[in-house]
Amino acid sequence: MDFLTTALAAAIGIVVGFTAVIVAVAAAASNKMVSPPRAKGSWTPKDLGHDYEDVEVVTPDGVRLRGWFIDKGSDKTVLAIHGYTSSRWDETYMKPVIDILARNGYNVAAFDLRAHGESGGDRTTLGKREAADMKAVIEWLKREKPDKVKKVGAIGYSMGGAVTIMLASEPGLLDAAVADSPYIDIMRSGKRWVRRVKGVLGALLRLAYPLIVRFTSSKAGIRPEELNMMRYADRVKAPMLLIAGEKDDLVTVNEIREFYEAARRKNPNIELWVTGSAHVRTVEDRPREYEERIISFLRKHMG
Image 1 (cartoon, helix red, strand yellow):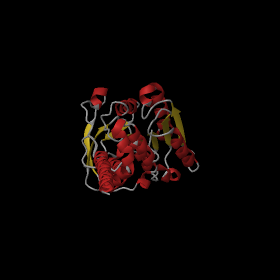
Image 2 (cartoon, rainbow, N blue to C red):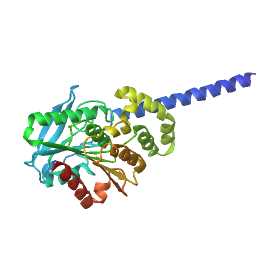
Image 3 (spheres, rainbow, N blue to C red):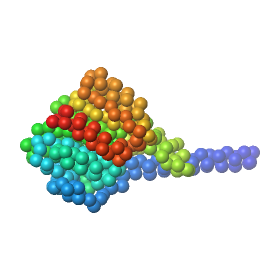
Image 4 (cartoon, rainbow, N blue to C red):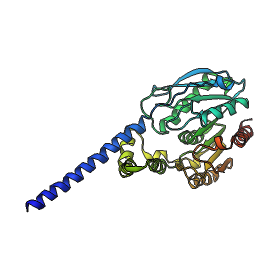
């Protein structure tokens, strides 16, 4: 009897201890998700040959967003929107796309999203408030630089791509939109993000994933279903180019194709470009074709 009692106590202790480990892992992962490390760099558009000004926009809830505005003497401005954990200094896609847009005569607005780069805010909402923030940037541009925004476009990457989809669903806000590797279902992409982590920690993260979602949702003040882009598919008003990569380990081509097909039923000006690249890597893999595709699309719909 004493042996059984001891064995039961030991088993309960193991279960309790393991549960505590899972909860601790979920809490730590959630904290990191809502407050990612801030990516900052030293280059500026001047290094690419483009004059610019440092600008700030305050969001409706008081977060100060910092960014660059490149004036190319045009009445057309394109927002370049970075992804989760990144910033306007991103070397992979932000640097080349800023140069592409500016070299082709478009004014460019590139801001750090909240809780990223040099912008204020201590927590990201993984796209929900960020869409409202970029809407505030557009409203600021229309108020402060009305002659520069007769036409407005946006190109977003990953989370920034999802933000672009949300902006494109608002009537009259954008004249053209490009979403490169946008998450479609944040829950599915989140699971794939966790799968990137190998070893014991990866196994613990996968076990803790339901708790990570719960904790993150609470801290960020969001509901995961709000960040399913299929909710917006039949509401996309602006012409949109979707870019999907066959080697993307976060968002599948099938998910983006499903969104494309649903959106196209209501909006014939939706295009899909499938490449062989990894997540947000098409601009790096196929720079010349990328520039031709992006600029051709923007000129078609913005002039």
